[in-house]
Image (tube, rainbow, N blue to C red; front, top):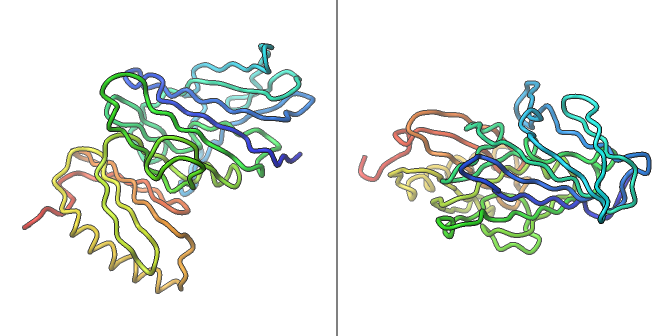
Length: 266
């Protein structure tokens, strides 16, 4: 089965204090025998079987005014009863894993990998995807922005709004950070590189740009120009203590201690 109409996803930090994202997936032409959805037990770049589906705490489905029955087939797979499209599946994801692999949400920031939050419409993996990222409601979130290497589809760069991916594999290979963060940029071999630092820090961002520019230029030259992307983003969570990293097609998700970052004059 294939579909040229985009699969439409929507994600909103529904309850930052409670660590809950609300996600929806809309399929224009669902499987007439009952559309099946599944969440991966893997994430690109991390070679272990995971159990991301355990964090889906509630889900429901509808087609127009019709409320649909949902059958859970196994720990990570659900099937909706047959219906006429469009079909919308909506669900809550508990996000309290402060790592580069999963999803985390609180009142200071939000972070997610697609494999933790985006159910795949089985049989439609090759369909284009559109993603709408919405800000949390309430006071205190006016300064939040969005950082991702995913292509914009109406959203301004680093803004909430609509993004796009060529298919499901690309959708889940672009992690997303949201919140108030420091942004620094440099160019290497004609490719824009952005550094995103979330969390308290005293980093010398100019030195970070100089050092990373040399490293990136060396590796792009080593593997051969042109680089395989037109933009790259370093998504970095700065902690009191901790480390980690996961590579993606046009970005990486990183964790580091604030004392590991270079400081001016040191």
